[in-house]
Image (cartoon, rainbow, N blue to C red; front, side, top):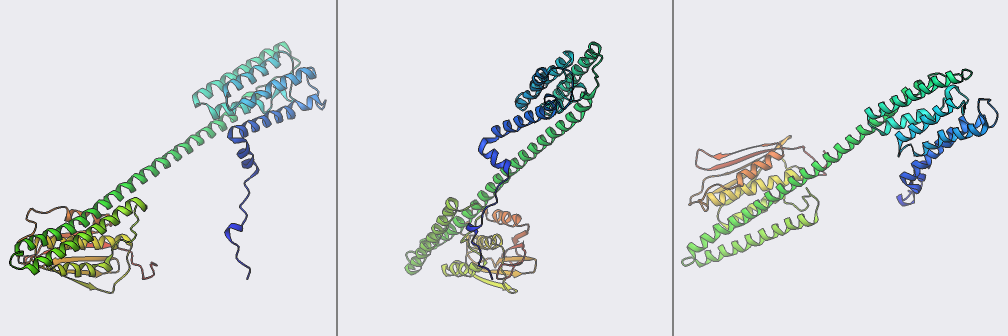
Length: 412
């Protein structure tokens, strides 16, 4: 087997010759070179045969060379001054007719100079303006030909300029329309890209605000509940008060650690990056931590074999359970909370239920943004959520998250 070639040793494809020339001269210099080549080619092809004596037409060689040069030279500036170039070429053609000079082998000095000028006007100018200018040029040449025929009947004249101008104008106008359409498409793509970036930033800000809310709400709820317990038992049960202080310290450190991680993500990672984010596998540790605090007891139950889910589902599932358990801590102290993960082929069902507890609510003010945040997370994933009190006095949050199941290796 041949040795693999390192990518750095593979020679890069050489760009086409015109691209290399344009890179050297710049866009303006390359366009000028092209137009100069067109002008020289037109003079050589249509006036050169007369000067070499291959074709015999009316007029002296000096006059033929002068009119041929005057007709071809303006093409050098056709991109910058398209209307002026067409007017000069028209004037040169009419003057040659009236002075009985033929500088091309064809009747009425037909050649590529006039249609190229018409094409450039249609390509560079607005449609109405280019149509008016082209019609004026054709009319001027036609009238000049009619007058020249009356002055010099031995020289044939025809309407070939009209036959050349019409297709040249149509092609030039089509080219302009196509370029304008492509410009609109590129502008629309640019605006769409900006809109996507704004939407991604907005979604990322919303995601981070939810993360901050969940982290702060969970941590402060645990601190407030344990501080209230410690205040009540401070004199009679000092050991329980110390335990409450230890729980407050643990909850505070955990919240600070999570907040530092979020701030680090804001500063260092790209939008939507959920690196090192908690997932469903961390629910057991969360349940153990909250149960150790003694406010509520939390158990995690799984129906069906565990599966690997996309990062968004993993993080949202963790935060939904965390918020639901935090609500139980605030509103149903002493409750037994059951977290049930039901794995199905096309969705993950999260059920967090409590039995109502036996103590006064630690947060009697009322509902906050927890359930609204859960609803936002579920809606972003295309799922649905139901939350409400149970007939036996408890409370249940049930969220269904549609998923595309992957195996342990992450392959679909």
